[in-house]
Image (tube, rainbow, N blue to C red; front, side, top):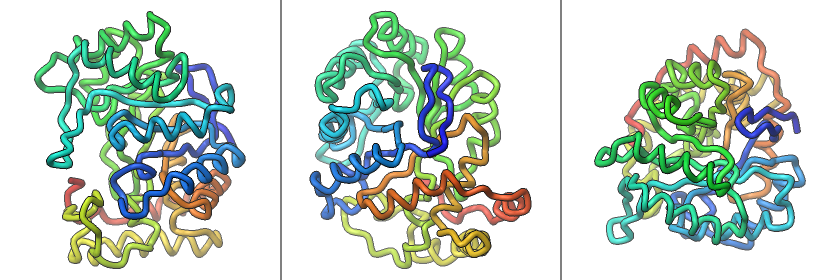
Length: 316
């Protein structure tokens, strides 16, 4: 697989990473199967995937153990990214931010144990806690780097102003936010900031939580699926957003590619510092996603995709 540089770590990784949350939570929970997920993780390494994204809240806690188990024999070949700063409320199925320094320090120790590693390559503040000054949370993250427990630190779902505030305290190595043909907000300020400051932008949900693959035809989601009740996955929104899929499918036909591959290739085209991290629980979709690294979209393709309409429905 083609590679991209992670400047904050001085390492190169496969141009398409792997988001692992769906192996333990969020999508079709009745289909969770650790053995199948371990097979996907093993195949990912064979295909040249070397950036794996997880978090303590995924599961909660079970996803880090799964990822740690799968990558145990390949530690020198891969980058492990995990996150802290969201606390799951299992009673409600929701989560709340917690950016207290003591919580972040304890979370790091727990993640190191679950992952079975001596150091975390990239550690994100999963969400900024409005009850804790960002300087306090970020300062404690920076201390983890000084202590040798973490190699680089990043932020998730933040504004350009918040990134600049944190960067003035300690380098922001990566920013992770949702980025796809139906979620383009980070392109205005955050993606350019990352390019200007040598930070990686990790784009999660590049397939629009499955919608941009063209396989979501109805709003029939089981309880516990993150798309259940989501404004973009109502029957009306699914129908209206077909206009985006139509554009993607037109480009895909020209390249004898799939809609998923075009969607990922568009994210890749947003900059050499941009790393899409699609997730899947099936080997065949993993292989399809990885092949997007070799899909070269033309200027005309990109102009056509950029002109696709905005998504109908809020993200959450």
